[in-house]
Length: 451
Ligand SMILES: [Zn+2]
Image (cartoon, rainbow, N blue to C red; front, side, top):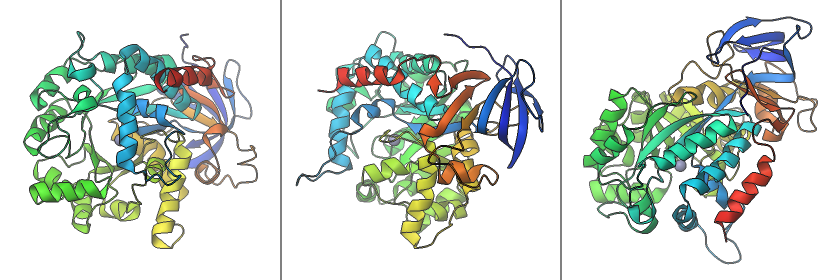
């Protein structure tokens, strides 16, 4: 179903950092806001009413769509020790089964779930490139194309962060399912990714899987590619203590120091997780203006640990948020968890304001994905809007403030009533307009993959 841009009247909308009543939001064929008017007592003729609290569309800056198939499975317990590394074995089993068609089916459901949760833009950290055994498909980017088609069907923007993955660990070649992730070297990665062109509703970026998966002498072609194409550059960083220990043993450097020495850090770069940095690492990240994408629900699910969020921000790191493994898809919960983890870590409340956290979910995520104009309601900005119900059982009675408090400290993804992407009404009254029966479709795609 194709939808065309419409004009909306929001009962309450957060414009800039203020909540305004009766906001008319018109957009042009390019999906950007062309007109904003406030204090209109009701919807003008032809405008679609968004009853509730309208905010900018949120950006999910870190996603691996296929991890969604693992939700609710393999939770450990019953005397069986479970860690990030044992969870990874299950993830590899799913990775090994995916075909381009199966991945498209699954990703349609995952991205539809994101639209229903108020996510209008996703950064897909994409490393499942090749057929089993590492054999190249005839169309070498067929998996990326499948993800793009899925996002288009689900009606959200996708920034494809094509990920360089070359090794199983320091000095170890890829093995088993990892062969599907690996190009021959970073130049081969660059050659393949150069064949991809930005799509109409989303761009492209580069990623280094991690210091484990990309040898230091292979980092430069990826950094150069991102610079030459003026794209974001993302990298998993210090999610687990074992990564730090292996990197120190192999190179004598922390992962952050190694990335700094090879020109990976800087304002176009986003470090994902940064859960276990040293004080020196925090200085390097902040001093270089490197962004940090926190994924708190995944970090708690995988027992990663609690990262030093406030220290990273104080050092100068812009903050964004991601749902990563999709144990949960709810950017409000991610935002809230940043503060809750900080409270647990420091024994202090109020480390971040609701405004700080909503900015991380909105403008911070858009900026990390190379679109600094997004994540705000303003003329010229992408016409991406979400409306939450301020009178649900969860949000009822919560002070509206400037709109950030109910979103961050009370709402859940289930409170999203409307999602508008590029002026198109993708979710209306809680129903996805393009993917009817989104939950059923997601269940079928997961069941087809999992025993
Ligand atoms: Zn990740």
